[in-house]
Length: 297
Length: 132
Image 1: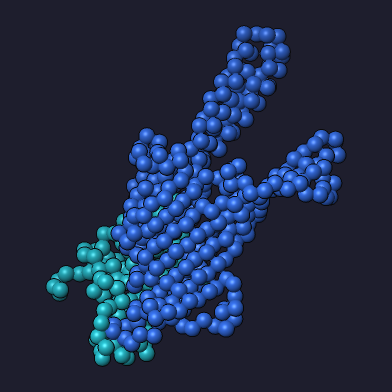
Image 2 (image 1 turned 120 degrees about the vertical axis):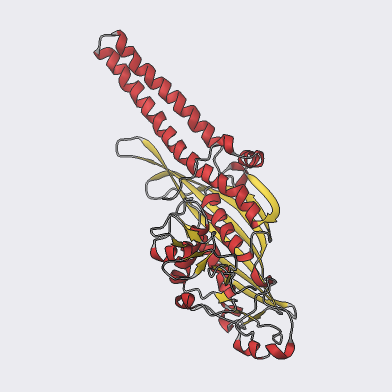
């Protein structure tokens, strides 16, 4: 049987991890193993905190409902002493769960950490080794905070809407560099463009309802440099040369690929780490390691 | 190297594969390869190497721990679903990785190997298929 890992609690986090949890940003250059030691426990903590936050949200809702129906119970029981405990318990549950929900909200990190950053670092750790330096600049705050707001647009109402307000955010949340096996150098940037659309409309019963939708476009840019003394790289195909999503620069020292890809999703969910790895793989598909002492290409 | 010293036959890397080469006290019951402690999955029934476990089981969900087993599961799934052919820089051709259709050294480049001399692919002293 596999040993179950002990749950990560706030108290078990190191001072630097707590600092990162508070600031939600980090910029440093260290080995992949050191990055994983720093970030993997935080990712586990965040995943557990997300679950706890969801439970606290449900608890708050449950407390409000118990309070609401408890007030009816007082009337039905003609003010009997026991009936007073029902709404009181509901209020206590709502307050306790609400405070917990708020406290966990302050500690919340972007799911990009657990779904993209840590798996990507795990791959870099295996590819380059535990000690090769990885430079990383991370912003783990939510993508739709005011600080990242670029513009607000009042769109013309359509399809029965009273108003449509669109807010556009730009979130350059990850930039990094790493050295891979064979001396290949990797750099990458991920920028999320988030569109939040709030649509107000009047329902058939006359109530005004607001619906919020999100669309996200993640622009991934990856650069891979292959040293000529270790890699022979196939020439770029003609159609690729004209593409703005693939640029190849060659010199005597080697060849550098710059690749871009936009991934669109209709939510705030993190991108799939495979999308990031795919771009690096595009460059590696074209590279062949040069055997010992082979003539340079 | 002592003939009695066994080295782990699992591979490290994602875009390029290279031998692990750590001391390997264990033998995988499925592939019969020598395996080090890091690449051993004691939780499987029977215990086996992480690569055999990864091939036998579905990859775990992404909210799990990103350990050696997760990595090998993910790598195996990625090679199969994305058609990526990793570069193999080991000295021996291991048939275990045949299904990945791994790429070796550039044959044309390898032909000039003996004449030119120079450094290996990586700094770990591991040569390529073009080496004699």
